[in-house]
Structures are given as structure tokens and as C-alpha cells.
Amino acid sequence: MRKHSRRFNQVLQKIQKNRLYSPLEALDLLKTISSVNFIETIEAHICLGLDPKYADQQLRSTVILPKGTGKKIRVAVITKGEKIKEALSAGADIVGAEDLIDDIIKGRLDFDKLIATPDVMLLIAKLGRLLGPRGLMPSPKAGTVTTELIEAIHEFKSGKLEYRVDRTGIVHVPFGKLNFQLEDLNLNLKALQESIEKNRPSGAKGKYWKSIYLSSTMGPSIPININIFRDNKII
Image 1 (tube, rainbow, N blue to C red):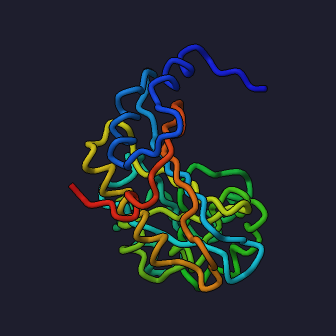
Image 2 (image 1 turned 135 degrees about the vertical axis):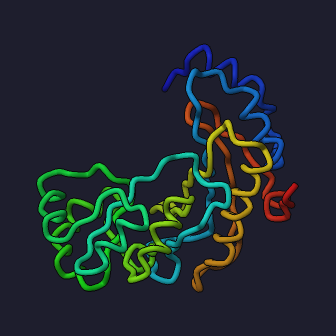
């Protein structure tokens, strides 16, 4: 059985057993109990009534967090022709065509998001094995295959992120840093809740929202009252 550190056990004692917290209470508590010397990321772990082995119960979408993620996102773009200049002017960190594809094959992965235009998709198909397991392979569903480069680059740098349900029916999403204002974290969390609700798969049956936990990088998970979460009002 895994043993926790003394610091973690002391933090754990501040969470009331068998209590479901409101999102605001949980966010405030996570900020209060943080005792590490770096700024932790805060995450939502949401268990949904989905069995992703069925095609009509798979959930994969994107959400624009209105207050951003707190992380500087490095965006790479694979395109050609005039679109190269467009991507550079929009603030992309790395831009190229076949040359960038070759660099990636050789191991260049110093980016957080890879965007491609449809006219190069056949060229980057060979990157699937390398990028797929890392969640970096461009796809239309994720908004990373597009001709609207300026918009896509701006959105991903401003806080747009992709989420998907894992094989156990859980969505894990980082939605800010603990040094964010409480109101900003709540705003991001509300945007995530609305996105998951809006993108409910057609095959979802029965209870959709099963359980929700909020946690920080080095902190414990705090269980959330689902009804309060779904009725969460922006303060």
C-alpha cells in the first residue's frame, strides 16, 4: 500500500470525510492548504456515465478557458505557401513544411500544440505513431486541422485546450493555476462544465455526471457536490 508523506497526511486532515464540497469551497480549500514552493496546477477529474468502447459514447472536444491555463503554450504549425507567413504573423512559435516534418521525425518535440492545414495532412500521416501517443497529432475534432490559422493559433495560446474521456469513462482536465483569483478558476470550471454538457454523446444513457473531484498537482482530491457543480453560478 502506498504511503503518503507527512506533509500530505497533514493536508489530508483538513478535508472533512464523507463531505461533498461546492466548487467554490473546494477551490478555496485547495488554495489554503497548498504548502509547496511552486505554483500548482489545478485539475478536474470528472467521471461520466460513458463507455468509450462504443462509438456513440466517445467524448472528445475542446474548450476555451476564458481566463487561460496559466501556462505559456508553444504552438507549431505545418503548412506551405502563403500560409507560412500567415502562421508566423499570428505568433506561432515554430512554422515549417516538409523541413519541420523531418525535424519532428528526428525527435524535435519542443511544442505543446501542433496545427496543420488540410493540404499537408497526407504528408504528416507518417507522424501518427510518434505524435498520437503524446496527444499531439493534428485532428479536425481537436481544431488542429484548419485553414483558419490566425484564429486557431490565437485560441490555443489564449487558453483553448482539448479534452477526451479515457477508457474508464473519466475526463482529466487542468483548468488553471492555484495563484489564479478564485473567481477566475470558477469561470474556467464553469466553461468546462458547459462544454462537457453541450458535447454529451448521443449514446450516453442514464446518469451522465457520476462524480467530480478537484485536485492540485501535489494536493489531495476533494469530492464535489454534482448538483451544486451543475448549478454553479459565476461570482
